[in-house]
Length: 348
Image 1 (cartoon, helix red, strand yellow):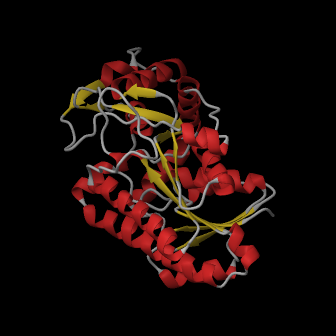
Image 2 (cartoon, one colour):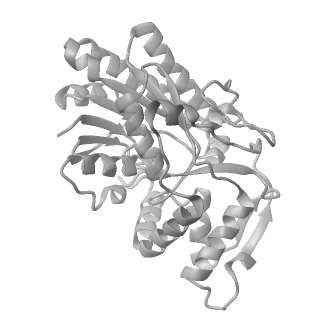
Image 3 (cartoon, helix red, strand yellow):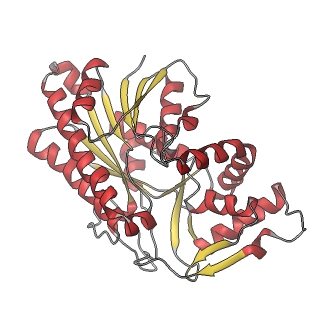
């Protein structure tokens, strides 16, 4: 076994991909997840390797539970994926984002610090708390330029504001208390197991259920897309090589406006699952009223991660998108299962 890792939010999209990678590496993983609408047991099905994982159903705001898991499993790394992450939901119901993304992060940091204080010097040298964050904390870009680790935070939604607060807490626990923290900020992820409220799986779901494909505003909002497996590989590099107290950005070097992404999805579906009526999937696209405060453009400059960590991307967007569409078409039972459990109120 390489490391004992507590992965919060490990039954979600990015978390489950990280768990799969860790188990294949030989790590021992404890997954702590409250199995809300976006966290599901199904995301952990079929994960095998020389390592192991155990699912513990619980809330990151439960400090007693977190402390017990850190101690009982002699955790080396705590990686916090647990978050409310959908901008539209944060606009409608911001309180859940404050609770999970701020209070939950505070609880994890406190529990990690208390555990860290009890460790021997040799164990302390390998202990890490890694805060998973987003490029949305930096606000919105104009037509040029990219976000980097030195970009001032300027969040524009309740979601991004709550994530920025968590990032600040992680930084403060390093500088004030000496807890060995690292923060990573990534661009838009895509790939297997993403809950069907996010753009790519949502459009696939709508197309397969003969629904309109709604595109916000004029469709020109730009995002930088990184494959989830590239992102997870970067997280491991940050854990193993990152400077304590620092931040690392991971991007996909794949800026695409939303209308381009939706059309690319439609073209892949035309190839892989043509409509019964013979019409192109693009014919179902509809422009809808834009969301409030919709950031215009995000893009990540991950030069620092490349130079200091040796970060490299394996996936080009077009081939990665084709693989992603193929995965969702081959796993419609997964989609139906997670949507059903979400309707029941969290799949617990």
